[in-house]
Amino acid sequence: MIPMVDLKKNYIDIKTEVINEIAEVMEGAQFILGKKSRALEEQIREFLGVSNALSVASGTDALHIALRALEIGHGDEVITTPFTFFATAEAIVYVGAKPVFVDIQEDTLNINPSLIEDKITEKTKAILPVHIFGHPADMIEIMSIANKYNLKVVEDCAQSFGACIGDKRAGSFGDAGCFSFYPTKNLGGYGDGGMVVFNDEALYESLKKLRNHGSLGGYIHEMIGYNSRLDEMQAAVLLVKMRRINRYNEQRRNCASIYNQLLKDIPVSCPIEKEGALHVYHQYTIRSKHRDLIKERLNAQGIASVVYYPIPLHLQVAMSYLGYKSGDLPVAESLSRQVLSLPIYPELEREDIYKICRVIIETINSL
Image (cartoon, rainbow, N blue to C red; front, side, top):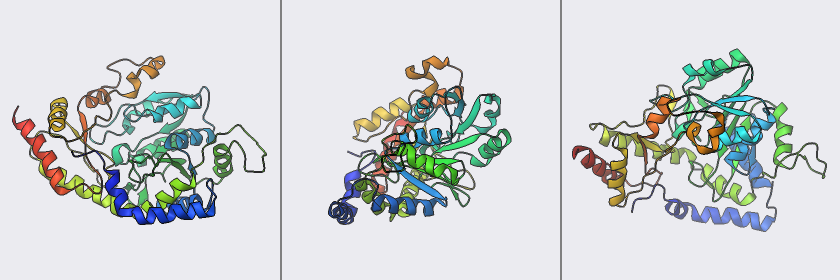
């Protein structure tokens, strides 16, 4: 069996360090908002080149709290992509705002900036791009549009820890960058966790209050907030993995390079990396009109694969109240019927990639 990701193999490599870090937490007996969380915030702040970083309980909370801190709320509209995990739009709805979906680029699968301006109304308050699968969205163009119309920008970086455009990291362009530390992410813990990063000092106290029941401490509550604090156990694990994040991302890129080389001569679309961008391959996602057959053949050989995402958000039942219909966002709808994500993780063996590609090539050649 070749899994989508092998977290056990990763744990074996870092087991001693993880146990030592967790033991320090146990000995210190401070399990919430302690020194491990503060150390992680500082390391991520420096890594991303931002002024501030605050840990929260999940990537979804990061999006939700960032939107609240930026005063996005009832009656507002937030422009985003339909081709992403549900949490992106869910967070917009949480604050009472309306998601407005814009179709995606066929090459990167990210939101298409050239379509954004047509969706801007007097109710539009923010743009929420997603760096899908690890390739950064076109933040230069998105920030230009946001500045032109005085809009906030919240980056969904759940799948893009370490991705860059030039020398700027994903998450450092907008008003806030939101990260998930779900176990399968490029930087993942052993449970849920998230981070909000930002440069505006005015957001700092608001975000700190929001993650901790609207309080800065002392049982004094200045607003209605949330219980969204990263626990010290997760911070301890993430500190171990932060020491290796550049290597992990480079190993993912090496895996992607092998995939690209082996699949280049068959009619399957492989991920691209635009000039000036650094892709960190949270997913390695191919596109084919024969997607379902490829998936079936892989499964028969004990090889995992996943369709991210089979139904674009604008066509999800939970979003039906928005009034979208089939055909409204044709690129996202078409690609959702073609995409297939293949196994990719730092420890993936070259021989396993050969096996995966052999099955795909044999499937295509049999048609």
